[in-house]
Length: 175
Image (cartoon, rainbow, N blue to C red):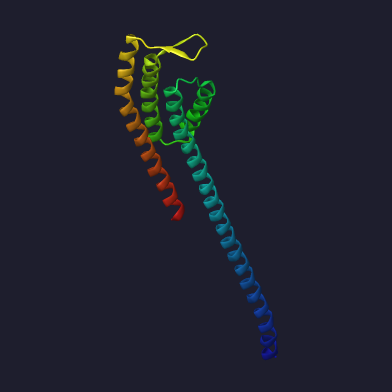
């Protein structure tokens, strides 16, 4: 009698153990899938951040270059001031401390250079395309020419800092 009782428990025990094993497999599979999805989400978020920063930094460098070119041809830049303000605000929020520090230094030098450069340009005469050269302009242009190499040097340093930061972010993406 005992033999029949134990033989009827074996299928029941087998079903019970199989059920527990199936439940464990389901939980482990669910956890692993969840972890994989979390890693994928974080990776995609990092890629998105990288692309946004890269685009922001490219826009920043292009705006600095545009400011210099417009100053050199004595063009007004009403929209550029607005653009630079927005870029500057975005850099302040999303940029690293090094980039913010470099941008502040460049802004100071750029302001000084552009002010001197504009004062050193020959003055426009009315609405005609004529200009008058004055000896008063020479001192400003000489000062602007002395400042300009420092401005270009700092912009190049900023570009290097940006490149380094983007390389670090990209390296972090690979790991």
